[in-house]
Length: 330
Image (cartoon, one colour):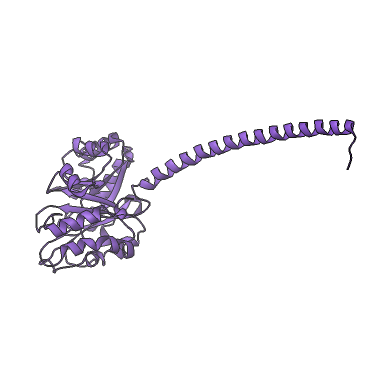
């Protein structure tokens, strides 16, 4: 089609203006898109960092996945064990007598290094009636104030294995519960909200079985984690048991509380079976049978039996594999 010259000139001018206008529109849109994408990246990155932080531990130190690994260092220092394992277990189990100040240098060093202290507070020769009636409040309040001053969360396990041979309250469950609740209430009153309360009975009661275990339970409002201490004794105390067998009877009782479960102490003897396999079975059993167990603490010492990680080369190699399993690196 033939277009007159004047009309053609006007059309070309209009076309050029349209192109310029479209370029401006697309340019502004692109710039806006860059800004939106940039802001989106900032917000996404911030959310991702927050998510990663929250996935490590909840307000009660519960991992979002897997379980926390811990240790009592009775056969080597933290540094020596770290070199052996290629990592540092996140929970550090320590023991303190009733009058000992467990808010001091060891606990402070753990918190500064990013470890979680697990304080086992052992009231040797203490009358639980005097705890319950307030006669020993000065000591309790001092520990509560010291705990608050630490400023970071840690586990407190008061009078563990109360249903077993420790018999802290003379195996008097109501008295134990009264004393535990009184201590807890004083900590709360002092503002020691960074204390995470772990309640860890023995895997069996003094007579055997678990008929009275839950009689010692202080109540949901007083416990953040339920727990248990249990061992494979090898050739004594009932003979060799697998990891699953050690904990299979008490697990349903604890799981019924729908709280995370802490194995506050555990280990296997060397004599009587295959300790390396015993250790190899831990992670698969946690995955399939004990999903609420969110913390496992190994008692590394040659004491009643050879509980050590390195009781044999095979045991050590198995423990190193377990310690570096992603299940224990949530």
